[in-house]
Image 1 (cartoon, chains in turn green, red):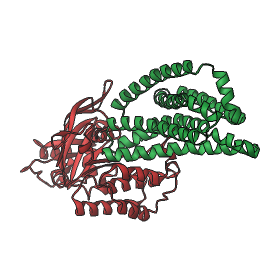
Image 2 (cartoon, rainbow over the protein chains, first blue to last red):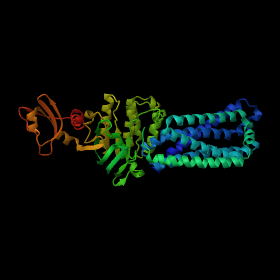
Image 3 (tube, each protein chain N blue to C red):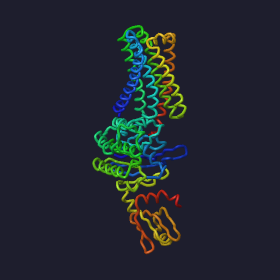
Image 4 (cartoon, each protein chain N blue to C red):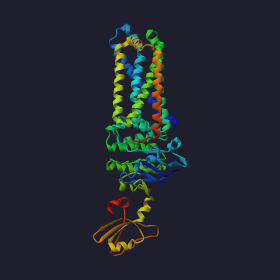
Length: 219
Length: 291
């Protein structure tokens, strides 16, 4: 079963990464449409931002739907709860790691100011994706318990993520500069992000594990 | 191979959906699980396949606990009745995706058989589950159950919503698969008369309790409907296990279950008739309302 479990989650992680790449491609096309030819490399350098946004957005939605649809489904098909828990966790980590590696490669291959700033911001982007995955998962858990409230919070989050993505697209290559200016000292943000990640992550993993243990399958 | 549960309980507050059930399922049999709505059929199947945690008791496969045991779970398949609602979010899955996930998780999955059955049932695999009719959803569960090739396969209301032709096809397929592989099937159904021909053993649940586990033929041989004048009937069934007595004026009809060696003496005023499985079920589970 372990191999089959990995097969399922690997495929799901690839689909999730596909969503992120699709979103990044869409944002690139939108940004490139109004840009002058000499500005195109700059637009291209922003790909990792778009990818991170796309993955963060995808992680929120997918982690939510995994709780609602996929976990009961795979339990119904004979997965153990332990395997489902670890599969879900590894799937999220794999998506974040893959997006971070792609970002790293893009910025290493296209050196410049944007890339330098981007490489500095990379830990923060990874944290953003991790936080998104935990938020999505917690929303899924909330939805199971109190349906309406879960949906309301999810809608607000999706709205915020969408707005964030729009701002990034609109500001295009100036995004990095604006972001750096707005954010101030990076170390503080990384520290805040890490604390938030630890808190949300612990809450998410603990609740997911406990819910899975006594979850009754309903399809 | 044996699937066994001992003193199995599933309680929701004060309600015992499954109430201290001891049951042994042997390999190479077709069991029918029957009971009224809310008798605990689906809950029992969920517990047997570790899809729901039990409040008390244990389910084991050849002595090994089934709960969180991937080796044991690889031998089980519970193809649930699909109730697609917005709450589950499952409706957005396409049939082919659902079957793909099943093919990943069931270790002995027969892809060729799944494809054959999809064609036989003319199932639109590109459609989302939420777009399928009740009958088509039943077909999906049947395909998963048969193609899973699990040693113990459980089907919950597999023929719900199927037309007569499809139901007939299902029973034929079930018998073919059973003859070819000797797998164990447990079928929960309300359409008892149709299923009676394929069942070897019957498990009857009432109010979460196991009322009876019996060989179908033995049960049919032992059940009799005795009718006639009240005094004559009472005399004829004295000392026998009587279920479901009905009185109509001076006449009376009772269902009796005979033990080996017992018989009902027919007389001019007493008629003794055999009963179908459905009638026996009604006699055993419907008596409170009639009394």
